[in-house]
Image (cartoon, rainbow, N blue to C red; front, side, top):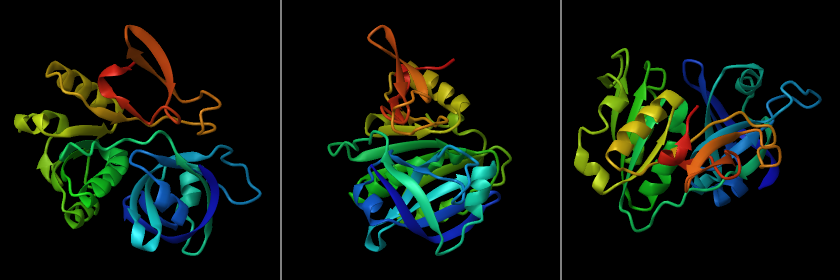
Length: 263
């Protein structure tokens, strides 16, 4: 992990209230692994509002140009400040952070199940997996079509996908969790990764557990330090009959879904 200041190459609107920021950072491109994230200072020099850095999953990398990108939703002062940054501005961040996911070299196929902005870390997995010759299937669900542009990225990567939208404005109408077993044979030959709202992860935990299917889930929590020192982002995990409190920023952000204890 390093503290870095890098140049923003683009910061464009990706959808309603959503931006994609591209950053020139050879160190991150060289060292980032699936599932890891960066922690961004979301205020100008001399300001402390917001005081804490904000974690963002790495959405994509372009090794040829030493560029990585993040996807973010404008929600508060920090992301509002980020959306105001222009090409050539400098952004202050730390990374890579978190424990990386080991994409099994012996497994040829990967199934990704995403919901809303939870597609961000899954997109990097899809990128790294397809680059290594693996077959990837993406199932993703949204409330509306505000991430419509993302479909073009999937096509460009050569990922097989099905998209579900609650209001019927994009892809197939419905919830992604209602269709995860449309092709049951998929689970016998795929590693499963998922990320999305807690409600979605709860349903997946129940449904996949009933079929004894293992899945790796990515979690997002508010963080203070991002390096495991403050214990401010713990979740409960049940292992061997005992409850452990693990840090999303250090032991995570990826955990075995069946082991997570939801409140």
